[in-house]
Amino acid sequence: MLKKLLEWDRDTFIYLNNLGIDDHDVFWTAVTTISNWTPLFLLFIVLLIYKYGKVEGLYKVLTLLVMLLFVLSLTYLTKEWVARLRPNNDTQVNTLIRILQSPHDYSFFSGHAASSFSITTLVYLFLRKKMAWTWVFFLWPILFALSRIFVGVHFPIDILVGMLVGITSAALFYKFHKSFIGKIRLGRSEGR
Image 1 (tube, rainbow, N blue to C red):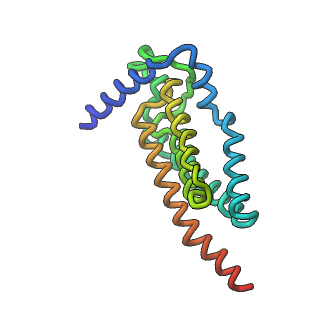
Image 2 (cartoon, helix red, strand yellow):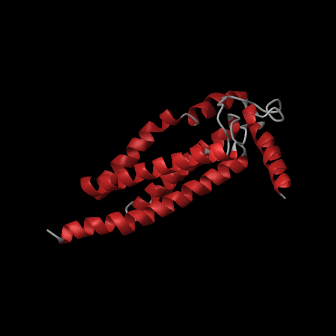
Image 3 (cartoon, rainbow, N blue to C red):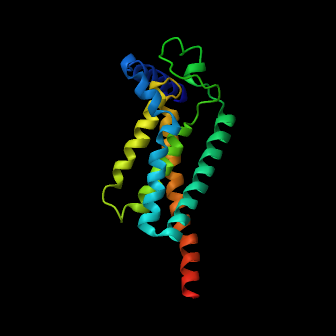
């Protein structure tokens, strides 16, 4: 079963990666670069503070940052433990694909997918009742995760698992924020 799943993963990756067009390489390389998304991160922070006020907004930003640290640590530890080669470093695959980036660390699971889906999901959970269009933010992690296939550095399973880790982490930190930080804030306001 695992062998068939890994074969599907490899074959699907090769197929999707080869759908890439030279004319779009600049686009996918730009999309996959984290620093290019800085304006979106700043927008998230501004929206949280604008919609919740300075103090509550900063608590939400702090929860977001702690969650991101958790996700990045979990990603790093999992990559080191599983030690799955990235497609660009796998000699059975790298001659069959288009490679636009060549990182040398491991592949499973995608940190780009995990971090982008965790950030977006938590921001969505915080803002969904205050803004009707927050679902649009999910365009970012979808493009961001897909870019990892087109630049040749992640298999589909890496991305799917990263996506699930990100969404699950966001749900857990949202619950943590509501039950723990929300009670602290409520207790302080009642004590005044």
